[in-house]
Image 1 (cartoon, helix red, strand yellow):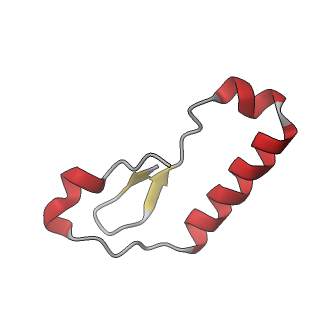
Image 2 (image 1 turned 60 degrees about the vertical axis):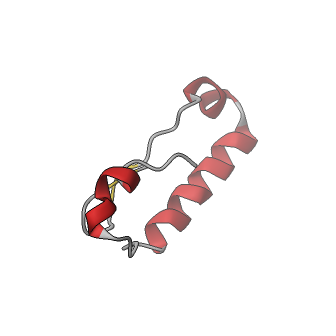
Length: 58
């Protein structure tokens, strides 16, 4: 996921799009994870380390 400096989600990217598109379980898990990530924002992370956490792989 990509985060803004204020810890809000700018984008959630599904890396394995083929699996997401054809596997109902993966699709469901990815969708629920995306919802949970949005519900937990904004993330309180140190702004001075923004370059280290602006993209987080989950």
